[in-house]
Amino acid sequence: MNLIQDPWLPIIRQNGLREKIAPWQIAERDNPVVDIATVRPDFRGALYQFLIGLLQTAFVPEDTESWGEFCLEPPPSERLKAQLESYADAFELIVPSGPAFMQDLQLAQGEVKPIATLLIEAPGNKTCKDNLDHFVKRHQVQGICPSCAASALFTLQINAPSGGSGHRTSLRGGGPLTTLLLPAQAHSSLWSKLWLNTLPEEELASRPDSNDSNVFPWLAPTRLSDKTGTPTFPEDTHSLQMYWAMPRRIRLNLDALPIGPCDLCGEDSVERISHFITKNYGINYEGPWLHPLTPYRHDPKKKNPPLSLKGQQGGLGYRHWLSLLWKDASNGDQASKVVNHFNEEYGEVLEVLAGDSDQRLWSFGYDMDNMKARCWYEQQMPVIHVHKSYREQFIQLVGQLVQAAKEVVKELRYGVKTAWYASPKEAKGDFSLIDQHFWQETEVEYYRLLKLLSQPPTEPPFLPAQVAGDWARTLRHSAKNVFDHWVLDGVAEDMNMKRITKARRLLKGKLQRLGSLKALDSAAKVEQREGV
Image: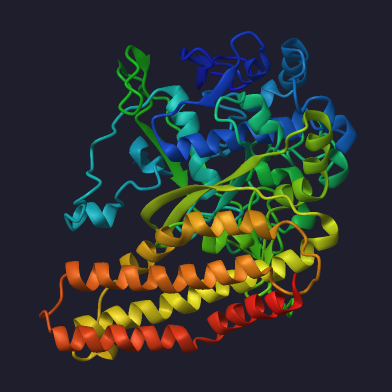
């Protein structure tokens, strides 16, 4: 199967039709494709990145102006087909020997593994040996179709967690966070969703040759990282290899392809792939890699390379909005290169061409604990446009709002523990549900106020009175509501009403004296006195 020429991408069209297409068909204008339709959310996120990588490699716009040419309508599908097919030789999936997509060129022998091991959450050998596969059972996936195999292979290579001695993590580290821009309208074409996330040639790299192993590492012998090998740094290869990074040495096993239903998508009468071979010490990506679709945390002292942001326990929410859309000076987080370019260039282009530049940010990724996948998280957030003259001040003000919320949730958590336990400092356990309840309780109001705050105040640098006052009241009110919910309806050692009453009174007092909330109160009062 060739991943450029053959129909293998599962999609849904505007009229609801589900089928499989070749990549170049995303540009068809009659009954356009509106989304990827996979059986797994991680496959969907990976296939978005696969298609963005194809466009960035084979159909890259020269500059922002040429990008605008196709931001509203896709190119003729035959033109896109011709561009993509020049790279078809690098995208053969199943071949007995020679270059195969995302597979080690010379790997003839290695450890034989069941195909289910390509899935990131699959239980490992030790987990199965110790009978600890309680939630994700072994032997559930024994054979999959070539389409699902391609999705699983690509998903693993771009998200690869630590896999034991010499089994390398992905270029972005294990379980990286990906952020993609999407049109606000859910019915928008898949083309428009993908094109928003491409960079002009001047921002990344020139279009490579079709047989460039510096872009497609499977076209040449693997750059090993054993004792005789060496790490791979950004300067060692073409920057586009970030889209096609191949840290794991894998070769799909073609010895037995039994006909039957795919254990993932359920497609019947297909040649199923049941095993693959693998070996350690593949490409070891080190140094200051900055993948265009991922936000990073930067060391303010510039002594350590940037670290990709990861999925984390508790998921994603508005407390991450500043890091994912702009930058957060408190921890060094910065939005991805694609998001930054949109803020600087594409947003204005869309506003001129379409008269509307409403977008959303789709963030997704695994929460990994070394080799163990704890959870898959994804979240969509509004993209709020801010004039360049006000941008730095806006970012600073938003940071104040989030910092206040973080301080309040800390006091709230301790207040609930004080109500629950006679010795709250010694209480053990996971109290993250309290935090999550608070973040959800305040999310709608946060985004409403952010929209107001995005309009430049007439007298900077004061926080607009309405935003400051409303946010302070929201945080105090929500903290008390969440406290009451968990203390009165939650599970405690005992319902000690005297302790509960005291804890609530203490929480109320702390919320009145909390420095960040007092700053919001002061901002509101100052602006009111100034008549702003």
